[in-house]
Length: 319
Image 1 (cartoon, rainbow, N blue to C red):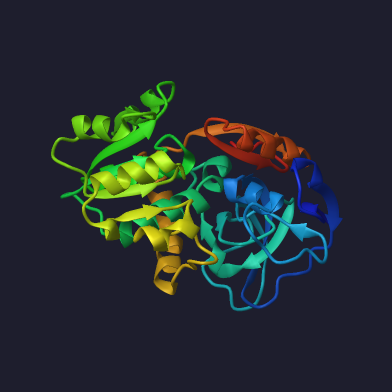
Image 2 (cartoon, helix red, strand yellow):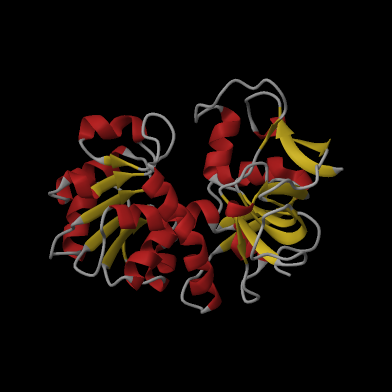
C-alpha cells in the first residue's frame, strides 16, 4: 500500500484527502518510483477547484504531474534505468503520493547536483517556458516581454531567453523586482502606464510577448507593443486567444498542444537538469509541506506564495 492525495468532488483545498492506495508492480514499459518530492503547480489547484474544466469525477481522483524520487522496480522493456536511480518524473499523473508506477517515457535520471525538490519543481514550469519560446522562435535578435516574470514559469522563460541571447523585459511587483534582475531581465512594474514603461526600458521595441499573468493589462500591453500577433502567446487566457489573433499554449480545450509542442515540453526536462547541474539555471524554492498537508500547499499557491512549492514524502526534499 501507498499513501496518495485524492479528491472526490471539486472544491476548495479542504477536498484534498490523504488516502491509502494499492500500488501494482510495474508492467512492460513502466517504472515504480518512491516519491521524495512532488511539485505543486497552479494547474493542480485550478483542476481541483473546477476553474480548469475536467471530466466528471466518478471515483477518487489523483493529482500531481511533477515529482522526483528513487526507482524501486522496473517493468519489462525498460532500458537506461536501474533500481536505486534518482529520477525526475514529468508529465505523469497522481504524483502527490509516496509511491507511484509511471510510464518510462516520463522518467529522466537526476544528476547528483540537483536536489529532489529542485527536480520536482521543473516539469510544468520548465516544459512550458522552453516550449513557448521555441514555438515563438525566440532568439538572440529578439526583445522578449515576459508578464509575471517572477512566477515559476516566468522565471524560467526569463532564464531560457537570456541563455539564448535575447534581451528580456519582465513585468513584476516592486517587491519582486530584484529576483528578475538577478535572472538577467529588466524589471518593469505592473500598473497603469505599463506599455509606456516597457517602451522606456526597451526603446528598440519588443518583438515577442509571453503572458503568464492572464490580466487584461498584460494582454493590452502585448497587443500594443508587438507588431506581429503571431509572436504573442498567452499561457492563461486560452479562450480569448483566437479572437485576439494570438497564440495559446495553455494546453487542453480549446487549444490542445500539438505532438511537436508536447515533444518540446519533454525535451525541456533533460536540458533543464543539465543546466541546473552546471549552475546555469536557478530554481527558486518556496515553502515545502508534508504530503498530508497538501491542502495547506494549495492554500499557499492560491495566496501567491513566492517560489516553487513542493510536497515532501519520506526523507527531506533537499536530501
